[in-house]
Image (cartoon, rainbow, N blue to C red; front, side, top):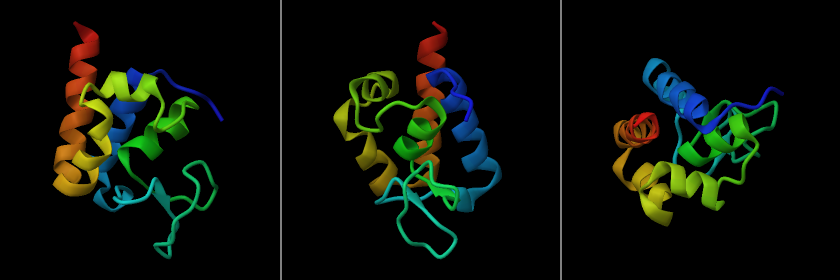
Length: 102
């Protein structure tokens, strides 16, 4: 699988979550079509949280410092995804891309 930069991956994930709301998930990194947890890079994965999407597209650890630092929300980025919902997750991804462009 092709690997992308964090900026590319965040843009792709935000675009996907906006265009296909059901591609976003919470409380696990990825789910299959039946709603069960699976690995983010598994062929059956069809829903991802922010960390699962970024790790799949970049090859980085979803909880590793590179993704945490890039998102700029601290280690609690997963709380934003899980507690605040899809729109907040998209906003977090868009803000990270904007900061990286500066």
